[in-house]
Image (cartoon, one colour):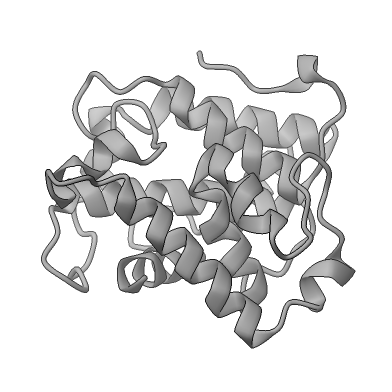
Length: 208
């Protein structure tokens, strides 16, 4: 959770040379179209661009890490969180709100987000009402965060944190060149469904 908190702070406030989540979202909002179309365009961009060497070069000054984890793993988490937070901003949510932050963390689990959120009565597949998020208590935030942390950690298995990049849905190419880019769509489309909604299956973003 310390690493996730660190990544979220960097995503919301920005780091030198890279847009913050809000700035990223606003760039896509300017393109016109519906919020769903804007989110799909953002997901496709992440899929095509985030794994390039030029983008990773921009992460060179990623600031001191909170704990001893590989810089490429930290980059994965930062980029993933920024994408989700940008989609949340496109959906009209206040990403400075701790309750929204917790929803972003839940989205990191991809398809598992449905199970994480089901226990508190939030269904993935349609936009989550602001009123529902506003009712999330501090105790519930803790419960969700614990569930998210458990699901991410159990994916590490017995091989250690170095395999995080192979376990968590991340942006294709960020850690090595062999990542399955479909993973980007899983977490991106989950974020879109939670924070914006879904028109039809045909509206889902797909790997470039």
